[in-house]
Length: 407
Image 1 (cartoon, rainbow, N blue to C red):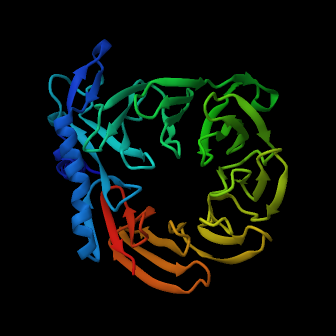
Image 2: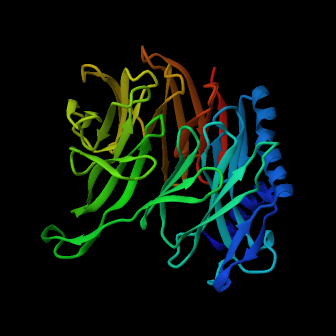
């Protein structure tokens, strides 16, 4: 991107986020921490609610932002943006005098009363900071700042009941109180050398996790090292309150995702090049689905009857969870069940020779019949997210957020 294009992109993103009006407080060693007071918090809330008024009457809404996250219980959105020095008072953003700082929404609490925002950069020595922001009109506490250190975050999420917040990063797994931000437990990575790693150190850093729906357990994939271009991952079940180890789950070493069954905490899926359905009580494999290709994402349908996989060859597959049989498949860079499990959105598109286009097809999840096709010329959308009500789809391309009505 040229310098002029970068300036325009930053200006556009900053304009979309200008309502935040953040200030800073200079922390130790001249590194600032962002503080949001209650007055500015109300402006954030106003910005979130604006799209809820606009969307019901529009087939297609476009917002200049770097990303967005749906509110879990309504049709509101939080928009991500890039902050500049103009948004701050009293200090540069960091000691390296960078003039921009990305801010993104990582997770909502299940009841929508709190959101976790992340500020930081991917630069060596930069400081990642999380903010737990209460959004309820009658919130009893103000925003909470959690400095997480200088390690890149891999995943952050509230527990389903909202009482805890888990942060996975290269420096370990940490559980915080979901309201106060107080650190409750920490699981630090273990480091070891092995012949397979040619004697070099490899860290058991958390790559991904998933909560059981009762907050009782955490399913965590730990990176043990690499073999060729592929991570070696071990799967563990941990106590959701204490982070104490419960059991290891036998799975292929290149696992990329693990998820609890949406309605049955005794079952889970682990995906790598195949999908294993596992009994979480004893770690035994109940069924293996032979996908045969590297799996990028995997998702249970809400009723647990089907499993959706998207593989690195840009194809998707729907599997019968009870029999392991393939129900249907097709081309797609991304595919996502809607919250109710009745529809499937499939994303396709190209970005070649300066020309970009995006096609989203909405299908009946049971029959595969296409019920709607959405075309967007000139845009290469790389992420989809369903509106919680199922009546809309959000698409992100890194510069703009699109919201389309689903009929």
